Every structure is written in structure tokens, then in C-alpha cells.
Length: 332
Image (tube, rainbow, N blue to C red; front, side, top):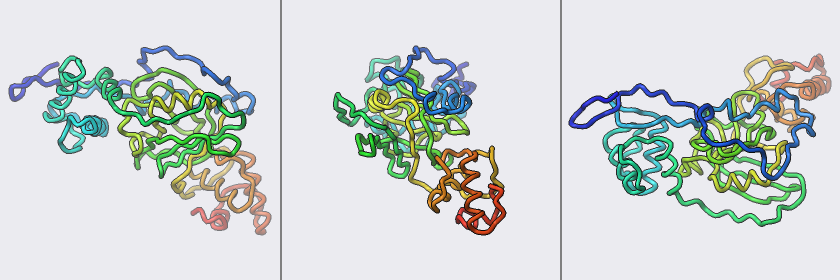
């Protein structure tokens, strides 16, 4: 529906952003180099189903346009930042799709030979991404044999690939916003898929985080790389995530580090999941107790580590998270 205002025609705000995962137009392919290894790692079936991009809407793109009232949000601010990086928008990063933003969009569309309607849909988002320079990261043709591991440092916005404990490659990334932080912990890649496009870019490597859908993926907002910008996922330049996709198999361990995990404020016991479980697991490991991976799941190995701690300090060894356990570990 169109409304006339001040000599301009405006869209009335009534559009609800659609999840790209539900309306994708490209074909999904299997991993192109390495076969899946999830089965070999004895990962439970429910965990192996986590990280599926079909359930993720965190990177879906609204269609943006000049409207009354003005459209506003972090996606508008990202648009303004992208246009600013390209030297087309010179206004404030207000997060409001005002007339100045619309004029910058029209100027960009004309420059790219697109329909100059001031509407930012999938074609304009992709054109913005295609115009952005991507730093070159050289990868040798022959990938060394050995066990692969990924470390993502959320504070430095870097993703490092290790092979047999030696650094092989380093990439810049974008991580979660302060209100939607990237999880901290030790997870595995349990899903790989290709060519979803839009905010997810050209590759997806899903993690078995037990809450939400998180993964490493490409982007159509390359100017966000090196910042806190996502809803918790790890964004990479498309060219970089394509390199990563080819050398990293499913089942690869991903360690997410670089910020404090959440304090423990509740009674933890087997079956509980959450960022506070990671806090407990990391503290147990630091104190010399084998809690297994800091995977946010309070399982048998975590309970056994708590029991051993309790026994060592003369407490009743029930394997449950009580205040005295938290006090000993310093996690409250």
C-alpha cells in the first residue's frame, strides 16, 4: 500500500521480515570435501540435529524502505554503515530509514544499474556486499593431515584454525551484540550446508549449542566483520567461510573463548543446560577435575567431577550443584 507524504510516495509499514531459511531460493548441497564424522564421535541424535539452518532466523533480512512512521532498527543501522563504508551515505548512524538514507540507497542503486526505487530487498543487500573489498587470506592447495580444531576469540573477533595443535589459518569475524552474545564454551560442528544466501552468506557450519541455533556462516553485510553485530552467530566474509568449509569436517571441535561465562545463580543438576553450566564445567576443569567438554550440558561426566570435588572437601557426594560447591569453585 502506498501513502502520499510531502510530495513523495511512501510505503505504509506493514511488512513483516521473513526468515530466509523458510524462503530460500538456492539449492542445498552436502559437504563438498570432507564426509560427516558426527556418527563416529557418538554424538546423540538430538545433538546432531542441532545447528540446522532451517531453524535459524537470526540473520533474516527485512525489506527496508522510507515509510511513515520511519522504519527503525539495527538492520537499518547496518544498512547505513554499509553505505557509509562505500562513501555513499554521510549522515548519522541513527538506525532510522529517513529521507537521507533513502536518497543514499537510490544513489547506490543507480550506480549499480538496479531499479532506483529506494527499497532495500535481497538484490540491493547482495549488491552492497558484492561491492565491499574482502581481505585476501591465502590457503595452500594441500591441507595438512591431522586433527582440526577451531578457536573463536570473541573479544578479538578472530577465528583460528589449528591442525594437530599448530595454527594453520586465522580469519577476522563478527560476533554477537552485547544483548545477543555469542555463546562461550566447547561445541562441535554438527551441520554443514551451502548456498542459503542472504544474511547467511554462502556457507553454514552449525554448532550443537543446546539453546537456540548458532553457527559459523557467511554474510551479505561484510562491513560488519570485525565488530559485534550478530544475534550470536559467527559471521565471516563469504570467501573466507568457503575456505573454512572445505577444510573443516563435521564433528570438529569449536572452542568459543574471550569473555567471562555467566555466573551460576541456580541449582544445577544432571539434565540442565545453559551458559552457567559452561561456567561450572570450566571452573571444575581449572581446579583439576575432569568435567569433559564445556558443552553447556550437565551430564554424567560433569556430575562425576562434582562428586569428586565434594568427596575431596568432605561434602556429601551427590554430584549436584549446591551453594557450597559454587563457593569452592568461585562461580557465584
